[in-house]
Image 1 (cartoon, helix red, strand yellow):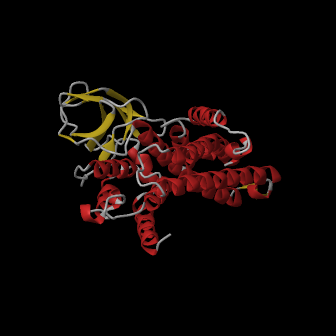
Image 2 (cartoon, rainbow, N blue to C red):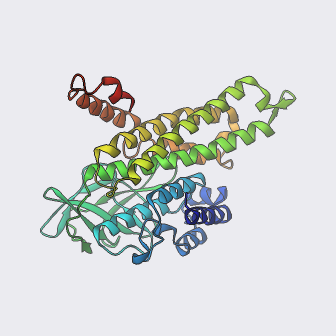
Length: 360
């Protein structure tokens, strides 16, 4: 990692540590938007991590942005930082002006809305980050190509929702609405490319939560005593902690591989075949691991883990939600299987081996 990237991550870590304690996250679930955290994050320029310096951003690499997303997940940051980072990257790729406020990419992994005669038609059932009146950024289909539309929240039919983790979600009805701005056709962007990118974002968030859950669990079993000795001295608990660490390490490796693959590609939203396999693998591994990590962490904590005042539940609920968004492990496993089956049909005896395809 470059020195500048590490400096940005260190700054973000201090910022989150100072302004995003467990009580801030809990209060956000009761409707109290964390204004101090919001102002500090925007002032630091973190939502512009993927925007070039020429456009007023940080000019960070894809890898930097994904590591920032992972770090934000370790603190369960209750501001739409991740959604704004992705929205601004989409805006930058489309040639539209990036947002200097919070923004939300209105895309839930389902079919994109269409645009006809300047009006957008479609409904997004489960949009994230629609909180505190952000700029809404919506990829739309024009024929067979993608354009990007922006909307203000005024006069839109928005039904507020909430995830299991208390994070804001919304049903956004754009039927017949004329956007504030509509970009020209965007080259190198398609629906599946957007879906893959957002799936990797969720995989990074799951990994960040895994790291926090690991820290909480290790710390708890060291301090909590039962039958006269720390819980961590019991072999059964040691096995649970070891399995948590193993799942976390496996997920980190899968996510890092996917980030490297995507970083080599000039168009992050193109859905290129070379990127599909590592991204799909990362989402499968992290989503599968979410069930195991949450179960073992709560077993290790006992009743304490379910307490609203104790932070474990903030992260276990989030990974349960993130594992489903932009495709669960079942969705991506099926697609990986179809991909491998398609590759096997192309196997030419003497030039390609089945094992090469399955194990690459």
